[in-house]
Length: 298
Ligand SMILES: CSC[C@H]1O[C@H](OP(=O)(O)O)[C@H](O)[C@@H]1O
Ligand SMILES: Nc1ncnc2[nH]cnc12
Image 1 (cartoon, protein in one colour):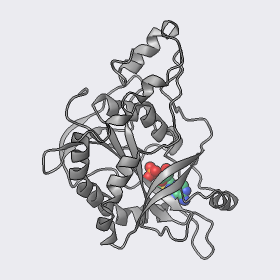
Image 2: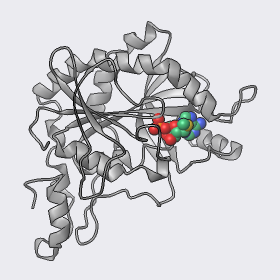
Image 3: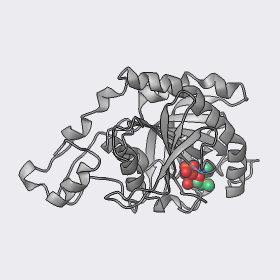
């Protein structure tokens, strides 16, 4: 499977969202990329109108990987290689705001990176230096498109919040109470462990990327609430995953139309302006790897 298969939409499922069983499975693959194997199989599903979506479970089947161990470069590279232009990435998050209640959904527009530099977070290294803009880590067109369908969630009693700030911690332990309060003082609204490096890598490969966060707990800042536990997260996710699937099904026709109307074309070519290494200094081995994800650039 490589490019031009008509698979333009990728969906990444997070904790508690390991498959999209409401759509018909038409193909499965486990491709080796120049950055190794993805977290699990890439499952191609088809919606009732015949539109194909590539689904990947971030933590693998059976939740194999801790956030720091996720092979994010292979995940994003594999999706890009088969032609994906847009990624909707689901994530279970802790809420740092009273008004973001468990079971609410959030479309963040900013990230504060509190990971510890131990995750591979770039495709550009080893003889090819490049710096993409990360001022806006998420895609506004995609966020607005999803937000237009907020009534699907409201019908079930959940609110969809937009323009919020996500703090991504290293984990795997949850935050201390002092950290949780610090993030609130920094105006962060939600916390997870998986936005970085996924969002950065998608940006490097010119993929329109939006995280759809599902609030599962109040972390540990809120008096009178239980401190977050895996049990609490998974319990809420069990109830929320049907909502996530419904939201995805609802936005698909609009998303297909937006792709056909060229609404995501403006980000194409962005990476080419970010290279700093002169053409003659670029290492052949690195160029070969990058041709897998950015064909036609070198
Ligand atoms: C299972 S609790 C912590 C775990 O949940 C979130 O995962 P994901 O973003 O993949 O839904 C969070 O980022 C942590 O990895
Ligand atoms: N409180 C929390 N902190 C980090 N990641 C989370 N995922 C779900 N809840 C979380």
